[in-house]
Image (tube, rainbow, N blue to C red; front, side, top):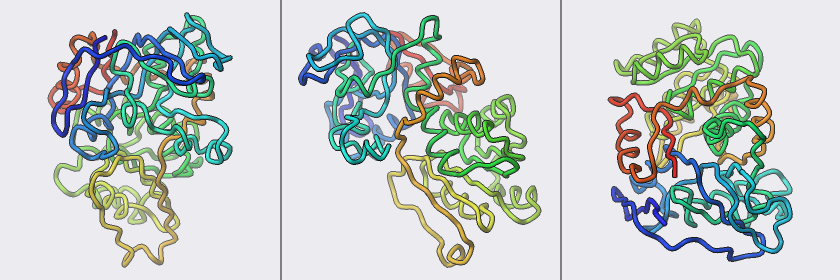
Length: 345
């Protein structure tokens, strides 16, 4: 089968790989029909994720059709259309019992990280009964690809961890797909202000269409000053970091109001400064999280009822044979205006 393989920092290739097989009774093998590229894949290619070693098939998002199941799989059978969760969970360990599926003792974020992932024609899914979701009849598969990762990530790591409430002022630093997912789902809680901050005017324009009440281009270095003026010198109740670089985390420290929350979503490959000399007395909460996908069933219902439309995040479509072009397009988003790219097998 064809698969996109990580070959070390800055290197990737579309290769021929053996078909995955059922290795444990709880496994399923899924024929991938649609997948996508995540910002985390770009972090892997930069060398920011040392757990992902050269030779790994990348990708942790997608939808497909069950091809084979292990003897202990009871929820799914060959031919079932399924949504693949970016997080694999056994449902039995102490972390899973606490709803922390991302820290599952034998799962977590393993797809496209410590085991082969979804940017291939087929993928092996451990703990299939608790790591796959049945696709409802008539559902838009492209929309559901957004439920593999970015929608629950933006919601859980940004909105829920940020404790967004009605009337809050919220700033989201980074208007890429994850930041936009946080923007879409923050509106469940009716915040008074939703301020999007980014370097890219196109993404800021998209943010306005997605519900942002204000946008700030940070290219001039005056974003903090602008946000403070917009909030009467107080700052925002919730600052969501959705980029994963030191400067944007520090920006969140600079714009959060006393008693506010900084919710980190971004994947950080290098250290970021924590200015406790300013924040120690400010009643600030700082949260970190890897998505647990505990909200996926709720988000699935929300998408099915058309309360939100994640297909608005899709800008480009490619075949698996064109995945190197897809990476090039996604990686050059400033010039290509790419948000999420769909890759069909």
